[in-house]
Amino acid sequence: MIELNATPLYTLPESYRHRGKPSSWAEMTRPGQKMHSFLEAAFFDANLNLWLSDVPYGRIFRISTEGHWEVMHQIDGEPHSMRITRDGKHIAVDYRHGLIEFTGYDSFKVLSNGIGGQSFLGLSDMYLADDETLWFTDSGRSSYSNPIGRVYCRSPNGTVRLLLDCVPYSNGICLSHDGNTVYVAATRANQVWQFSSMLPKAGQPMVGTFLQLSGGLGPDGLATNSLGWLAVAQAQAGRSYLFDKVGDIIAEIRLPTGLWTTSVAFHPNDDRLLYIIDAQHASVFCCAIPVRVGK
Image 1 (tube, rainbow, N blue to C red):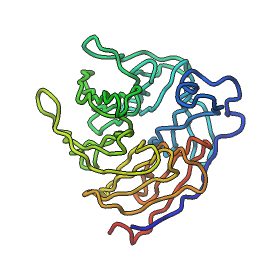
Image 2 (cartoon, one colour):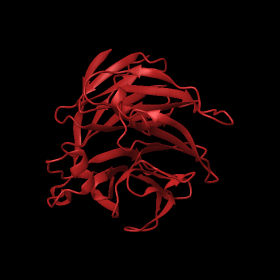
Image 3 (cartoon, helix red, strand yellow):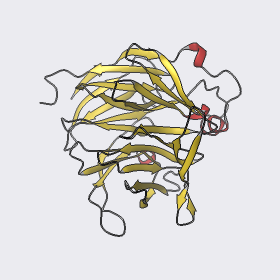
Image 4 (cartoon, one colour):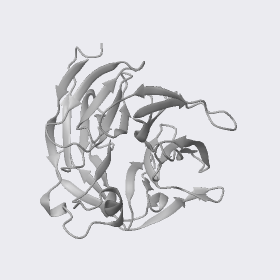
């Protein structure tokens, strides 16, 4: 294992920093604190623009390859993560509204707010697979004292299925590069869980602990690459980790400033270039992983 340092790349412009009264989500999660933004859920589009969700103020940002920030959506909601489908739809998980599709700059429609007469607790993160299956987490305010966080999948035909209902804050989610394994951040247990994406016809999949971490709050955003690596954003620790496909640690990557590490994303054209998001200072960092690492 090697220790690496991330390099500052982008910071939210002052003109986009909220200066008014904190939203209800901000007051719930950071009582008594001012919150200019809370950036999450980094992903790249086909043109290599970087997208981020600003949860408390309902904004979706796009950062161009030249570093220009632009608000692409802004709604009365709390979007935690968004992805773009092959046919160009902007699908998001929203803590307040559920699974939504943006229909314009400031408009959306609800695709699902729960199943079987049971509302979502408060959606947290999502992963759009190559076959357009949507995997998403529903954390609400779950924790070790109330381990009821959920994991769902939505098939390409729109059917939503509950997979797990026992997670101590289900958070980041992604699939392995081969698509065979689902990784879920169980934040309040400081663990990353895993289960097979080849689901049983009924009931819950068998789940195991892939990683037991320590420090900070626990794992938040997750990302994988074609090398079989799993990147983990360690919340409230100012760092991220890289692990190989069997769970051995490859590298620890520290940020020069900020502890609220929320999200990680590999660059689409370079599996060794990792982007890391810090919500405390609304900054984007990157780290080039040395070629010799992880061979």
